[in-house]
Length: 430
Image 1 (cartoon, rainbow, N blue to C red):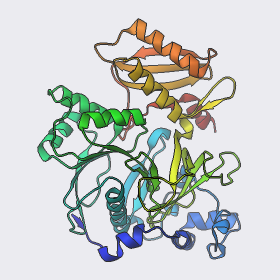
Image 2 (image 1 turned 90 degrees about the vertical axis):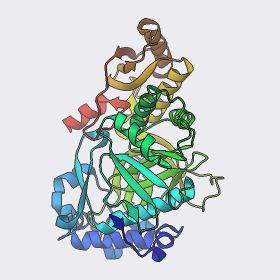
Image 3 (image 1 turned 60 degrees about the vertical axis):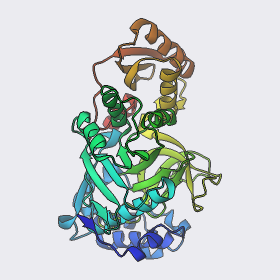
């Protein structure tokens, strides 16, 4: 199916660098007037949408959580819109399932904004074919009949089938989970393709899972093209995309991003890490107003040198708040730091580990689950891992290494590389 949209009003209107407050106010007013959930929430906080006239006023609008939206059900959806909406599903590392409703217009705008972001940052051209491996399929295969073509691959299918599609269809852009990209590399290596010959692939975009820059650099060496990371969620859509310098550029046309102190809820200064709170500017069927994304990052305070139009950037994308490790001393270590440490260890020590999951099971206990390759030496390599992590986690934490045949994924097929059972236990108690 082809998405039809007034293109001449599309990219410029949707993606130009302009003040987004009118968009925020429009979405807020619709949510207040046409959903029971947001009207009750704002009334309880003594906030009326008509009184929100400045960014400072907007800070008085209460934040929204996934738990609240799950409990609200259809009360969080604009009246009369649920039956005709497309539904996608958000679960992620929390394991809580939220159905997200979006109209045709939402999906079309999402596609147009995506095309513009890919044109700007990865060099997408008219006529380029995109192979999109994901759990949820886009309802459209091209945008406005302009030649931006997307073919879908269900990522719960065997990775060998994805390898077949890649070699047969020869797309210019591959969009894929990092864990599936790693499996794809192994599948292609078993066919004697290492590195991948020139099949016309010009860019790989990783999405939906946390990955390290070192891992993406390794993918780039295998595929023979740049690998860019996209930070997106079902609730807020496309939040940020890497440019060729590795900077995460906020996609301001899709969501307004705030960084708030995790304890006080106050805005933090650029460069200071805090929790990502976003307002989706294009989903007017199921509004997401000041939605707590549960991820930790900072707004960049230095302009990127890539040449892209001026705009805000994300810095220190530190990962899920519920994946942080807490040490006996009370020190907290971000999942992004843990991921980088683990991947650097595997590369620098040349450990034959094909997949891993680092899990904190108690305040003083961490286990590294590994899927081992033929060159893995259990006794020697486990000693290397323990010595390395004791430098990071201190000798007050016991580190165990377990070899497993595979690592369980979420129902959506996502691999969670860093897991905190402490957070999960606390969530269940609350």
